Image 1: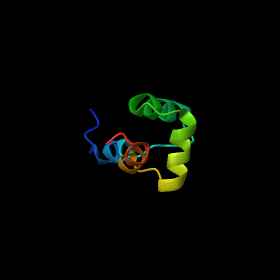
Image 2 (image 1 turned 135 degrees about the vertical axis):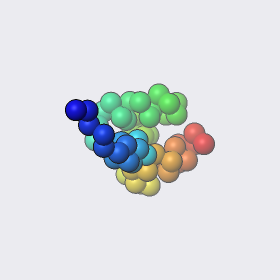
Image 3 (image 1 turned 60 degrees about the horizontal axis):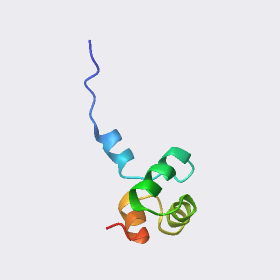
Image 4 (image 1 turned 135 degrees about the horizontal axis):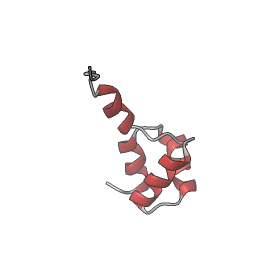
Length: 60
């Protein structure tokens, strides 16, 4: 029988940037055109909300 759980956990995870996860920092840096150091700095200053990080980096 297949797992029929909800996707809410995955959606919440996609809404955040894990500043300690190199692959997530690298992805966000490539997406926004910022450096990895800039992404880590943005996560430290505004938190791990992907929208806030992208706003800080000037993506949106």
